[in-house]
Image (cartoon, rainbow over all chains, first blue to last red):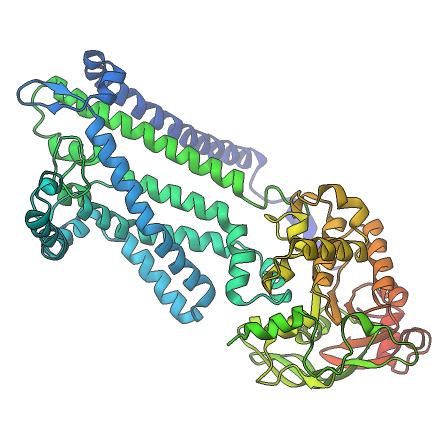
Length: 329
Length: 283
C-alpha cells in the first residue's frame, strides 16, 4: 500500500532516456573496439614476423630453413633452424616428462589429502614459485644449480667415460655444468608449479556427487581418486600438461643462461645446445647483417606458429575429453 | 588402515558374525525384523546441529520414508547411516548406528566395509561418465579385485535386471555410462549399488531430478527391491512416501517428530506438527 506512493516518483526519475541510451552506446563501442583490437594485435604480430622473416625464407626456402642444420652468421652466412627447433622440442618434452607426475601428485595432495590449512599454504607457495621471474631462476641456476650439476653429475660421468668408454667422450662434451640436461631439469622445476596449479583446478571441478558415489561403493580414498576424480578431470589435466609444455617451449631467460648455447644440432642431452628463444635472445642485438636478423625473425615466426598449434591442441583436448560436455542432465 | 581381507571376505559373501542373514537368504516371512537401528544419533557440523537424538528402526524388507521440510535433517540422518559424514571435514557424530546389532561407528569398524553393506543412491544420477555401462555396474566388484569375466557378466546382468534396466541397455553395455537418459542413469546408479549385494539401500531423493515417467519407474523398482532389501528413502514428495513406503518418519528442525507405519502416520498422525505438514499448512 505504501509502495503506490513511491512508484510514481521512480517512474519520474530525472535522468532522461537519451542519456541512458548514450551510456549504453558508449559502453558498447568501447567494448567492441577493445575486443576487436585483440584480433588486430594478433594479426599485426603475424604480419610483422612474416614480413621480417621473408628475406631468410626466400633465401633458403621454407623447407630449407626448417631443415637446415647449419647456423653460421660468421663465415658462410647460412641459416638453418633445425638445431633450435630440435633443442626446443627435446628440452620441453623431457622437462614435461619429468615434471608431469610429480606435479599431478602435488595437486592430488593439495586437493584431496592435505588438511585445509596445509593445502592453502602449499597452494600459495606453488603460485609464488610460479611467479618467480625466469631470470632469477637463471641466476640461481648459474651460481648454485649448474656447479652442483657439474660436480655431482657431469664430471663423474665424464670421468667414468674417460676411464672406461673413451668413445663416449665426444657425446658428453665438456663437463662444465652447462648443457641441455641442466636446462631440462631447471625447466621441469619451472613448469611443475604451473602444471600443479592447472591440475589442481581440474581436480576441484570434479563434482562432490562423483566422489561420494565412489565412496558409497566402498572405495578407499585412493580408489576414489582413481575411479572418480582422475577420469573426470583427465581433460583438464591433459590440457594443463599441454599448456605447461607451451610454456616450456617459450621459456627464454633461464634456458638461455644454462643450456650452454651451442648452435650445432644437439646430438646428446649431455652437451650444450640452444633453443629457439635462447638463440633469439642471445644473438638479436649482435646480429650481423640483414639476413641474420631476418633468420632470427623467421625463428620467431616458427615459435609463434608452434605456440599457436600447442594452444589449439590444448583447447581441442579440453573439449574432447571434458565430461560436462557429453553428459546429459 | 583398511584391511583388504575384510573387503574380500565380503566379496565372498561371508559377513563376519551377522549370523547368516545376508545375501540370498534375506527373504524371511512373518513380522518385520530390525535390520538397522539408530540410538540417540546426533550429527553436528561444527557448532550447528544437523539432527538431534534420533532413535529410529529400519526394518528388513520394508521401505522407510524420511519426510519433512527442507533443512529438517532428513538427508543428514540418511548420510549418517553409511558413514558418509566421515567425508565431511567438520561433521561430528554421537550416539549409535547399529547394523545387525553392531555399531557401525565402533572404532574398529572399517567404513569402507560398512559402505559395501549399505549401498547408496543419490539425488543426481552418478554414473562414472568415462566408464561404460558394464564397467559402471561392476565397478564395486572390481574394487575388491574380482576379475573373473563370467562372474562379472553374471552379476552385471543380475543387477541390471533388478534395476529394470537390462532390456533397455543389454545391446549397448559398452557405451558410455553418461550416454543414456537421466532416468536410465539413475537406474544404472541403482544397479551399481545392487551389484555388490548390499543389505540396506539408502536413497537420497532418488527421483527429484527425474521426469514423472522415470520417477514412476524408480518407484516401481523400490516396490520390487524391498522384497529383498531394507530401503531407506528420503523424499520431498509426500505422495511418493505414501506410495512406496511401509514406515514413515517425519523430521522437523533436526528432530524426529513422529515415526510409524505409513498408513497410520498419513491417515491418523499423533502429533499436530505432522498433521500440519501433511495437510500443507507449512513446509
